[in-house]
Amino acid sequence: MSEAERVEWETRHRERGAGLSEPEPFILSSVSRLGPPGTACDLAGGTGRHTLWLAAQGWATTLIDIAPSALEVAAALAKESGLAISTAEHDLDAGMPSTGPFDLAVIHHYLNRRLLSEVESILAPGGHLVMAHPTLINLERHDRPSRRYLLEPGELPSLLSTLEIASYFEGWTTQGRHEARVVAWRPQSNGAGL
Image (cartoon, rainbow, N blue to C red; front, side, top):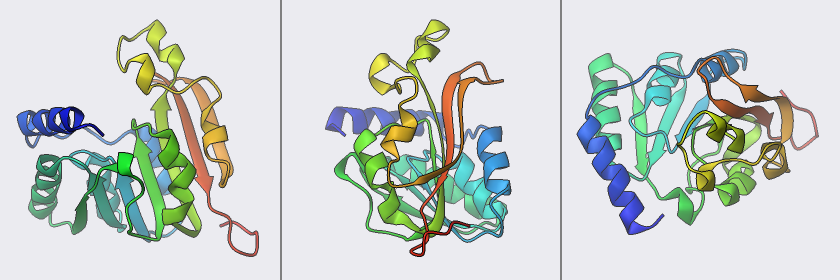
């Protein structure tokens, strides 16, 4: 990530402060079907709306983001709620963090194609990825995110070639966005999934 982009995100999080939106229903419903909680990471998770929900469900969760102010907000909200989370400042454009392995990785509205090809490296065998991101078709109704930050229609499964796809959806959501949504898992060494 360029220094200008990092500063922009830092400024956004600092201005928003502790305002936290509700977790995405797709993330909640997908994670709820995965079985008992384990370790989780929320990649580019901002101020932690999914991190905090995961922690409340019993997941040992690490929030990874480039903006220190976002991590500070998440840590303060977790403390207020009596939740334990870990935070890690990391530029995902520089590659995957050296943490893990995790039983779950959540990516919501963050696109880094190279990172997706490496996501297996932070998942434990049998670990899951739950991800949602807008596609180019979203521009029919919304100006943002711009074309640069959108998936091509049908592209997401090809970016996850080392993972097994458990479920995939692409279309207009009840929130009015055109998204690709996937639940995928890293095969066990013996080839069996969870």
